[in-house]
Image (cartoon, rainbow, N blue to C red):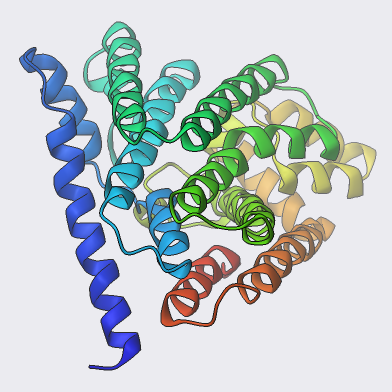
Length: 322
């Protein structure tokens, strides 16, 4: 068996153990808590953040089993934020299924989100590593701040600086924490920690910019959410920011008036303006810049099949046909 085949087998095994751990970690004496939590976990998701964590650990020659516990905690943290997000956004669909908020109600969503958070931190505490505990606790705090910031700026044409502040906290933060905590687990040195910090934050930004493009130009059967959902919720993302800056007064008015609307006509007009303004090209240029930062830093890691796997995984976030 080649090294590439061996690494693929290791990652496959790690992801299988992750799924087992996720289901076992959410068992509760309260049947409804188990039912709702498992409903959320079984909704799928790409397990991107725990995968990044696993790959970073393996890239740094970590061979222990604690990485599965860490990856489980990271996916639970992410899941909890999604459950709470759906309450704030009043979202009805999550990963192609009814959201917890829609299938049950907001009260259940808030409480189950808290339950999943608490389960995550039980696992984190069991790792008994102060660097990991501090990294993930700080990350959770920054994510919450990002949510509050985004909420305060809904239906407002924010600046690029504000946009990157929001996605840095809401998205890139957990990517970075996922990778850094894995690096701490692998006993990385200071140089490696610096590399991991830079590449993981860049992964998060690349991922979010790509996701924002998918919101307007993706396939809802693949993304698991309605096209134009950000527009309907009044969230201003980079494609809209660029289109607004590049548009004439007439089109700027159309964009402003479309915020928070859900009509097919509004969506058609917005997509048309984004396409014709040159916004897509500018957004892709920025996304590619962050991906290059990511790629350069990944290539500074020890040469291995795991490193190749990590690079191939991140390339997926840098590819969208529009």
